[in-house]
Amino acid sequence: MSDYNRADATFGGYAAVLGVIVLVVLAMAMIVSARQEEHIPSVDYTADAAALRDTAPYESRVPRGLPEGWVPTSSTLETGDALPGEEPAEPVRWVLGFATPEDRHAEFGISGAEPQEFIAEMGRNGGPDGESDVRGETWERYYNETETWRSLVNRDEEATLVVSGNAGYPELEVLAESLETQENAE
Image 1 (cartoon, helix red, strand yellow):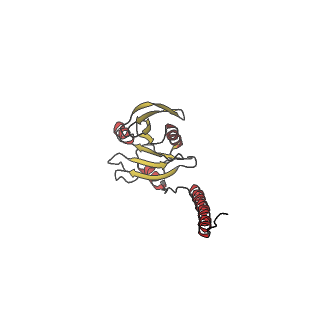
Image 2 (cartoon, rainbow, N blue to C red):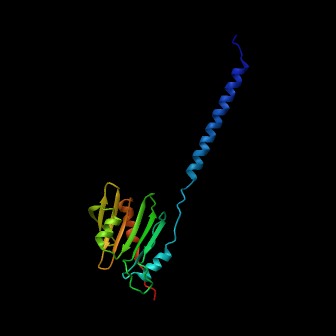
Image 3 (spheres, rainbow, N blue to C red):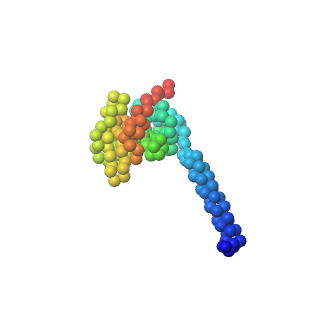
């Protein structure tokens, strides 16, 4: 006959119940964390876009119709202290940052500054890396391998457009494709 020990039976029961409780709590924690989405603060850049349109001595562009998941996170406009209709003392530039659907960073910049300086700044001194075709326009590619920073560049006589970030070229091309000319306020 075996000896029955009430303490051993009680401890075993408590251990089994505690194990079940721990498993239930872990399962609930995993479900809750899976359902929580990261909240990225969004900025409204419409005022900066309007000021760029009214101040820049070049044709301004703004992203329109980006797919779901693109979140504007920053907007910096430098107008050279010019008022609408005045000639700015410094080159007008605008940089608009986004969180992408792939949880990367992409930004769009436009400036009337010296193109090579603006490209080097926005592209973090990346080197040539081929070309992309965006809506029938050829955009130069630049890549900084050290910082994993890619850029797409489009230049005209008045302004330089740069789309850059740690996003891949396909996402940068989506941002570049969304750029549309703003109509001047009359």
